[in-house]
Length: 329
Ligand SMILES: O=C(O)CCC(=O)C(=O)O
Ligand SMILES: [Fe+2]
Image (cartoon, rainbow, N blue to C red; front, top):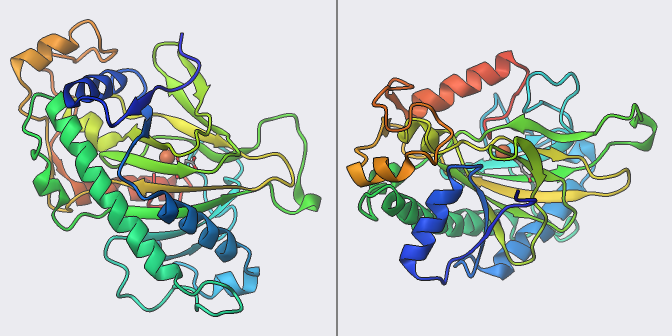
């Protein structure tokens, strides 16, 4: 039984990588990647800006609060719960942005020497662009693992709706912390909506993923220089549920400790039709007996085709009904 997620070295031979990635997609779809192309200094810089951004006073942060649930903008502490069954809101605050929001002058913090945010927006834009490049590389491995051409997802990446979110987890003001013996939740149990997510996390820990083999939550221990990748709902839909859309959550750090993370959500072209892929006979044979999904190879369709934008809108509306207000997961 695995006690944590696998680490996949992207410098391994391509065929090995493709095989490793597709195998992990059948169980929980979570893996670390190392030897990736993402610049380490850019990651470090983004975390430094994120700390300075969240260190601003509440009154300053509210000035660039997101409007009408549209990124870019600040999402206040405890403004939603990713698990609609939770009675308390998630213990985090965030700042979200989409691939198309950099021309928008509003809802970005004013960058001054005093708040040490000069260069913040440029850093976010570079981070976003570098993640988008990496996500195309990963999509190529995933496509090949499905028996398709490396460039199969090219259309998905035309004007994609990718998102980056800076997140700051903490328990809140000391006076507000109640110890009822229950785990404090930084982000409630959920799956992400896109093809997959690429996450940078600091060294605090708290991320957990539901593993289908052991039927339990397993920790995603921080690994320096690694990025965490997890499969999302659209990948599950494209494979008729054979690839798992990972359920995961974040435990809040202990009182007085602060955790920072930066997920990149690989949400594609709004008009891209999400339908069961033309999967080869070889692939269908390969999954037989390996997948936990009863529809695997049976030809029984689990979901009707839907465009990326319609799917995201549906999830967003449902999440609002359930009390979850973010477009992120
Ligand atoms: O912060 C993390 O480690 C994960 C965040 C997450 O799952 C999300 O925002 O969808
Ligand atoms: Fe998530």
